[in-house]
Length: 394
Image 1 (cartoon, rainbow, N blue to C red):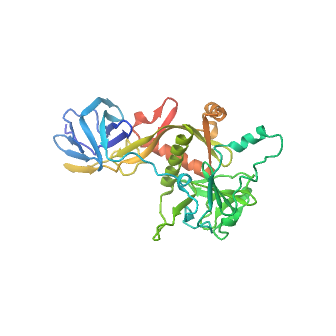
Image 2 (image 1 turned 30 degrees about the vertical axis):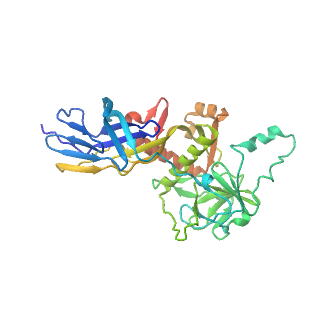
């Protein structure tokens, strides 16, 4: 019986701190008695009697062939092996606006969905961080009289206050033609979640929401009569130091993924916390996240990182060379969804634990985040998709 070599699926996870890699070669059956695998510094050669496939590593990624160990075949995955990897650049995540916004520097604030500018101000005289976490919830335990900090921690005209996942600006700074206030009980705003379907979420009635007038995307909410909250997952902030500035058109799912990963890294570094409770603006908990590491580089053989690892690509050419994707920085997390009462016991324990940090995002963005996590999990080799009762995502 003739043996045919289909295009293999390649997954390489590199840890920058240890210069080690976990390589998985999939998409070929176990009974390849004539399959020859040769590891080179920058290439993997797969050869049978009928076909030869060369897999070229991205520029700056080199493996050390003699270090190959722990070779194992796992049904459904393929061949697993561990080896030493040399990389020219460390894994670095893009810092978020919370970590880069500076006073007396010019910026443009845009709706991330349609690009409309939402602020009249291009420069803030003061950019100040708010106290960490949900500090305001503890004020009633500190004081026996009305909250003495309610007015002091509101932004003045040229101020911008930075929270965990949001920016506070004075209402006089916004462009009234670009955004408008809507009553929360009338703000059933349809938003597309990663182009896979439309979700309808009822926003809470306590605060009115701020909506982009062009695309009707919910950007934030009205905190008080003179304070507006913008969520960092809904606005794109760009420096105006470059006179030839053009709006960065970024796929919605990639933007949300990048911002959330950046905030996880920044908060874990600043506060030494690694467990996060992602809550919606509606007060519901949507997902529990456990950050494992943030120094990972991922290399894949397919251009679509959301594609299932077990999907089959057919290539009938007798010889082919496959250029692997660039090495992309990633964070590695464990997660548990909490919708419709799922994982209720774990959720209640985490919400009571002072070591768990709560992050608030718009409800629709929480749904988008769940879809991103699920797609990432499906793109991993099946044996790496879960750990104990948690699902794994990168």
